[in-house]
Amino acid sequence: MTFAHTIGQTRYTFPDLRALLAKATPMRSGDALAGLAATSAEERVAAQCALADLPLSHFLAEHVIPYEADEVTRLIVDTHDQVAFAPLRSLTVGEFRNWLLSDDATPERIAAIFAGITPEMAAAVSKLMRVQDLIAAAVKIRVVTRFRTTVGLAGRLSARLQPNHPTDAPEGIAAAILDGLLLGSGDAVIGINPAADDVTSTARLLRMIDGLRRRFEIPVQSCVLAHITTLMAALEAGAPVDLVFQSIAGTEAANRSFGVTLALLDEAHQAARALKRGGVCADGSTGDNVMYFETGQGSALSANAHHGVDQQTLEARAYAVARRYRPMLVNTVVGFIGPEYLYDGKQILRAGLEDHFCGKLLGLPMGCDVCYTNHAEADQDDMDSLLTLLGVAGVNYIMGVPGADDVMLNYQSTSFHDALYIRRVLGLRPAPEFDAWLEGERFQQLRLEVGNPEGLPERLLSV
Image (cartoon, rainbow, N blue to C red; front, side, top):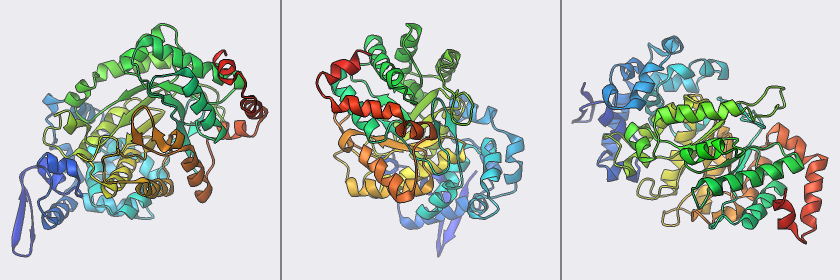
């Protein structure tokens, strides 16, 4: 189906839904690199006008990647909930935007339509939104998950404690964990990106965190962000696996480049749930959300697996993969892939808010790694702006990296102090279980241990 819109004396045409979505996307370097971006601001506005008039029901008739060619498309189509979609059936994309921003779109009503929204619908409506629209709609949506802590409650902001080390040295990792705990980070997860992706190293790191957790009775969950096959092997070997991690993307081919399929994710999800390691949370329920996914705009393009679809639409399709597993955490690593995909601070900021909004609109517990690589046209002021806007938008969690400088992955993120800043200025607290621990005796015991530095690493690593 061809789409068209006239501006002045110029009529712009778009041959299919893929082209329409790509041309309507706010400018970003990745789409330009792929030859998909609008060639002018006027063409972009024409595409956005045509998109605004498109019925939402059209997305159920035309797929950006054919059903028979891609298992992510099949997942989207086969799990679409027609009952949840019914209230939206008569709306265009523009009318859907207006509804989301209206008083009629209460948190309860938005939650009721999660399963009726396809990723392409979410991406489309986000392309019509200004920054303030992305924030105003997202702040209405709360997606709460539980393992040993409860993440996503109103008035709360959690932080992933990210104690990476370039050689996986236990002493260095332990020092970063203590630093983060003392500064109130870790209630989302203590998550290590390992330098070595092998079963022995993964199991050793998991046991180290678990021993520290049990000794000081810390209500946290841990994760070593190794490949899912490594984690499954560690799990089978008896390692204390809490959350199972995997990077995912929005096409079958891109996921295969990560070494994963839906069948493999299904297997890992079942294995992790069978362990029943979740704790009793503040509301009395037992936590059973066991998956942790990371995504990022540009991943499919970088794998030459984008099928001519713009990177933001593909990012939303990755969220369809994630929501299949009711994950504990989903994290868009927004500026990590580099300036080839998001060129500068302005593009990174917009992408972070789009990802957060689209993920929440699809019913996911969204966090964001507010980050950039050192060769991007961005700096920490840009990250402060995005961090603040995400805090206002109700993001579930952010990263806590010592000094905001990841010495293993070599990129810039947010620090333990940044988490303190955004909690303070917005009046937010950590997850309730972790918040209570910070006020209790075990936290004071940890502080005393740290206050006696003699033999500190050995004492903590021997638990």
